[in-house]
Image 1 (cartoon, rainbow, N blue to C red):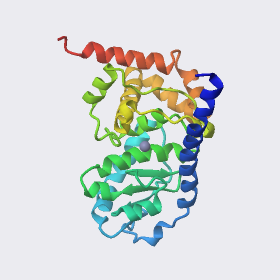
Image 2: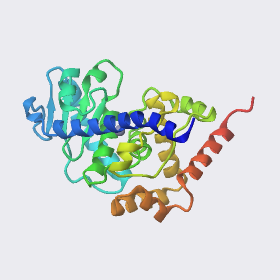
Image 3: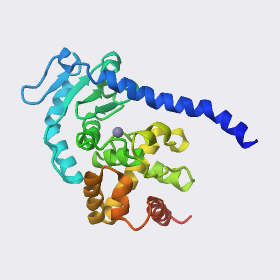
Image 4: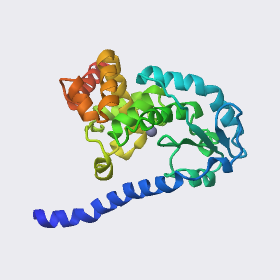
Length: 273
Ligand SMILES: [Zn+2]
């Protein structure tokens, strides 16, 4: 196909991608101001608001919050000074009212609040505490103004710190098999609003649980193989607000090279058949 014709065919697709990402942003803009206090406050000590039917989940989250905060602070490298407001919905209607992406399981609106889709927890599809810990990782970065970092990094941090929150339906074993068969994430370093709008990551086999799981495995690999370098990377990110700048200040090798080493490790661990 001639290059020009190819580009014209690509344009509507690019427009759609821009719209989808941009629409999410626009929705985030207006749900940002929806007041959680329209729901009953269910804790005297922390700002947790719960829809009727989600009080049990809210109590679980309130009990878990100190440990989850500590876990994020210890792994990410500094304190969260102002814990977030939590909104816990029991129904998809409530969640759709407060969340920018109504189909998601939980989301963090910058330093404003964390919203939990309790309908999925009540159905047994998601783990409340893991979701909270995952979102606290996003909250940690967003509250410092560190937004729009590469998706594999943001989600990988969340999955890693929460022991698999967000990747519930893709086991490590399934991810290893997918990786060995060539279905794997990419690990670009582009960040910022333009990258967010134009570079939608591709999920291996179109499976977002796989994307989250593999991202978590990569972050864990970075941490476990060189904890000092990993801490230095996070410190540099806090300083520069760009993962690319932080990366080049920390690692001699590219993310692709380190990812290839992880794949080699997985390959070597496979039983010989
Ligand atoms: Zn996430």
